[in-house]
Amino acid sequence: MTTVESNAARIFADARLMADAASERMDAGDVRDAAEKAWCATMRATEALVLARTGQEPGTSTEAGRRLQSLVAADSTLWELRVRYFSRQSKLHGECFYHDSYRPQVMDQLIRETSYFIRAAEQLARV
Image (cartoon, rainbow, N blue to C red; front, side, top):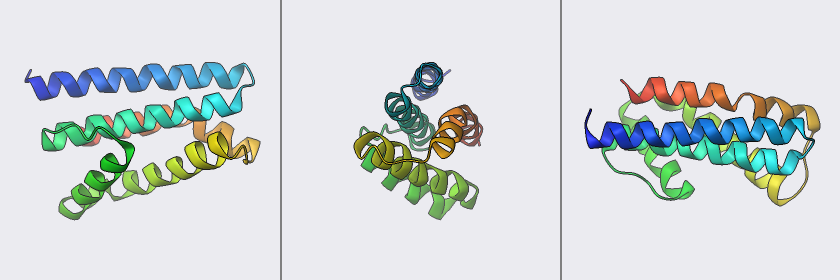
């Protein structure tokens, strides 16, 4: 395993830990903290994907989004993940965490589906 592969695997593992923590916070009724942890998991999975595909870790959510958009230009199979990334950023991080404005059912679904996002990113990282 190369250093890039090893680092990407470590970041994906961190994303899974954050997704688990998000589910735990949701179960405890702390929607805002759960949303932020789900956003963190989403961002970490995206960072790992970008690292696996480019050899460079983005470092910020803005840079991860930019690099993901660049990757889509070269590989359209990443388009749906990019759409999901920005939607999750807006809803989990912006609406729920920062503005405490959300629909409970939507948040519950987004938070609980974080593991699907991570798995999709892992599969796309291997291409």
